[in-house]
Image (cartoon, rainbow, N blue to C red):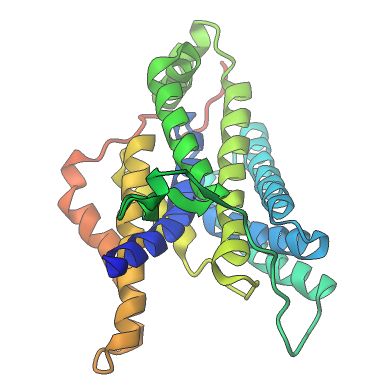
Length: 304
């Protein structure tokens, strides 16, 4: 039982990264903006969030700074696309490169080169009385505050998109922005808000890596998870409740690959590192016919 609890607990930790990043992509995608800059946003937010947490001694402040860094990237995406109609995919890849360079630059300017890597303050844990003592359930409910934040955001977004008028209007923008505009929905404003909020979620996911998982910042700390989150968002058909399930699945595969590296000496570790990426391709092939896209995602809209 302790092995199962340990496995689930570790999986939940990595689920945060995949889920919040994919949710960020879902939020912007529902308004018609396909945010493929997740990898760059994660890296920039990981560096800035870690630095803020380390310098202030407050992990929560690090997450706030990480989310603000993500929001800035989201503002850039929305402004450049809506103002100049730049292709969303070209813009996203450009920001991946920007975020990659910015992350290392910030760290080297503030921390420099040290023999011992600086450590982040710990993220506060939250234990729910009684329930946290039940086997298996304790692995889900004895976690840090960002895990609970992930649960709340996933539920809230499902409720927002499928139970509220604002959510229905936002989904309409992703399907047919012209029709939404005709009935009085401010398409441009809603796209700005969705992209900024979605990118802020990605920023929290990026900050979570050095603050809560590794305890320190290292170059390329996201290790391709921002790209994998795109696959999760697509696999989830842009639905929040499916995104968290997809995040858990991909996180479980990653944890399994980590554990196999420890116990197996015959399988090259490079192959084990490939497993999550192979899973993305397998899932896409298997569920290709069930995947649904917002009809206008990735397409610019001009009010003419």
